[in-house]
Amino acid sequence: MTATTTTNTTVAVAGGTKGLGLTIAEALAIHGKHNVVILSRKSTPSLDEKLPARLVVVDYDNVQNLTEALEENKVSDVICTINAYGSSLPERNLIRAAENSSTTKRFIPSIFAGFAYPTKLVSRGRQIQNRGARGTGEDILIHTAVYNGMFMDFYGSPLLKSNVGFFPMFVDIANNVAAKPGSGDQAVVLTRVLDIARFVVRILDLAVWPKESYFIGDRVTIHDFVNMAEEARGTKFRITYDSKEELEAGQVTELPCYETTFAVVGKEMTKQLFAQTGLWIIGNELDLRPVSTLNETFPDIKTMTLRRFLELSWKV
Image (cartoon, rainbow, N blue to C red; front, side):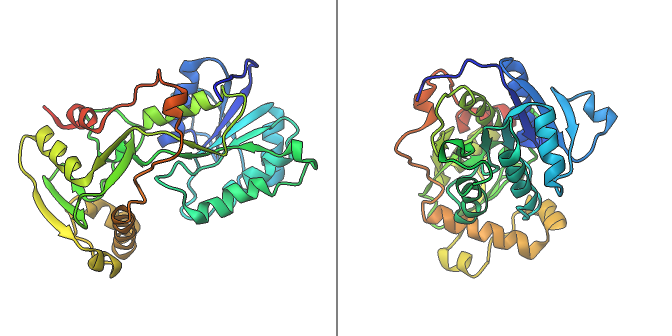
């Protein structure tokens, strides 16, 4: 599994103008081994100048357009980070284009999850596995599903640069409050987005891809998470507990930091999402414990601990 490729390739990052995609594109540019293009629905001159790679405008509703873009740019690998607000059609079209493209051999779908969401695997992983556009089994589009836990960056502050916006759940560090799901004894895996990008870049160097790629930034219980946040802030938090029964009923303690998400996503939908995530935590589903991880494959990548992340973000 540690054998690496040596051929210089062109990598396309779909959704590489912001968030995780931008961080991956930046890491690829620093790595310097691959040619890089960023796929985007539109071009904005002021933004394009700041991007770490050349931007290629594509129509995610048009498989032929996507196929031509991949072939014209001689794209061998696609990293998909697009988020179409619940619709998987843009990504499915990109998968079909990668299947049709004569130059494209490998695809990383937009999973980057805390655990193996069955619906995502059906719509993305199976779409790739059932591929038949080019015929033989040896010609199947190579792919790996990435599992990294929750984004640590969701809990950051402007003091620590990140391309990913803040999206705190259960621990409201800015307001010194927390609402622990269940007992708070369950562990979750969190990984800094920059560390995710580092691992993804190194996956491209592997000659053989595993069907699933796991890496662990840090593993902490919710209790320890809150304790670390209190230490970083230098104050005790006001703590409440949401029981399994309350979460099953869609009831969550409304922390002050949720107001921003309520305004964008809607209050009821946000509460449903947070309640479900709380149930996943109680069920230990966000405590990734795979047989093997890329941490073992690439021991030189030293991931940031949550304690250090919180200190850099919140300790002044």
